[in-house]
Length: 259
Image (tube, rainbow, N blue to C red; front, side, top):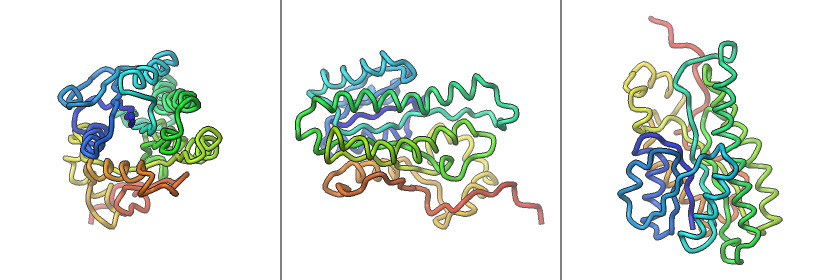
């Protein structure tokens, strides 16, 4: 069984597309949401469960309900949820409350989800353990940083370069074939990013070091998640950061000067 953790507040994002992709592949899917179930409500044969990832008891209950309602423990955990505060605020001016809330959602939430998942995995049967893996959804912000969004960048970097290599060594003590990887997109054409991506100058700067010169679609990321999740296609891929960013090599520090 696959479980997707998502806090997307608008429909049409990576989480929704990933759920659709895994359903098309015949998987049993549990989809987590925080407050807005959105289009998940319209999908057939998908178990939807509400939980606040910042709350320990809520996360433990989420994994228990997923097992009860979908016929067995979660075998693949996709940690897709996250918030990106839209206000442009440098570290020098950032309120402590913003920093703490971003890390509570984007970092403590994944910790609680992974802990609950691994505890449940201890009692799972061999078939579940043989397909066990955790997939984080990181970001180019975690690799290159992101000016005025240091809270988001720090949380994603911690998933990509802290938890991923740590957990790939720990999961095998519970499930010998267990794997942990991170799929890391750049800008994705989701409803949440729609207004930002209408700014042509912004898109040009964002793609300035990207050879493919295009913004990815949710399906680009969802397909890569499915490939990584497959023990047939990716059974020997472990502890990796897989960039889904068109070959991005960095960021422009400042807008290009007028000619």
